[in-house]
Picture 1 (cartoon, rainbow, N blue to C red):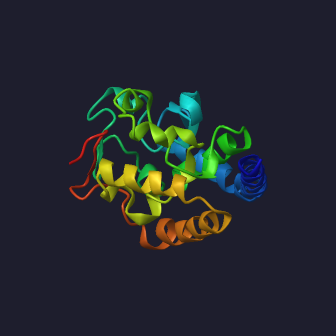
Picture 2 (picture 1 turned 45 degrees about the vertical axis):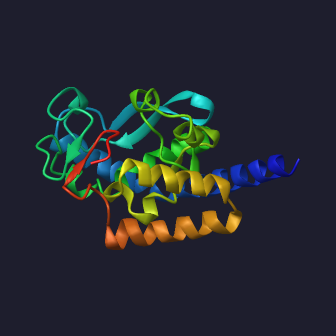
Amino acid sequence: MKKNKINILKRIIDVVVSGIGLIILFPIFVIIGILIKIDSKGPVFFRQKRVGKGSKIFVAYKLRTMVDSAEKIGLRHEIKKDDERITRIGKHLRWGIDELPQLINVIKGEMSMVGPRPALPHQVEKYSVRERRRLEVKPGITGWALINGRNALSWSERIKLDIWYIDHWSFCLDLKILFKTIWVVIFTREGVYGKDGINWDYLDK
């Protein structure tokens, strides 16, 4: 019963925060969308299959920051700081603004405001039993690992932080993560890329 009440509370917070966020950000999305279309050919939104709670597949939304079909060329799923596939407007969005359309996924109930970042299907196929614990909760737009190093962390470090979050969840912890996310994403912009300038795909580099 207690767990159900917690899930209901978390869902209410998700709907309220994401709903308000979408209303406030809609005019900004329109402006960014126009800039994306002017800058390069392709859709405004980048849609990609991700794995959610209980291994359920869903389509996550992002503002497109790379050339169309970028995952099929170059480094594919791996991304470097000066990646030639990143568009001019994309360089100004990748520090976190590009993730905001996932508020739609939160409204749909596929994601939460806070939780482990959603993984790609081919990454989940490699999960160990311990790593699969990330699938016990809905993935989040932000999370404990994101505000504590983001992509500068190794995969094992991110897993450790995600599992810690799952085991220690509280309303106050989610608020702390949300507020710190604003600081990390807007002001410090730490961990956008790995320590060597590359975001490795499911590897401990």
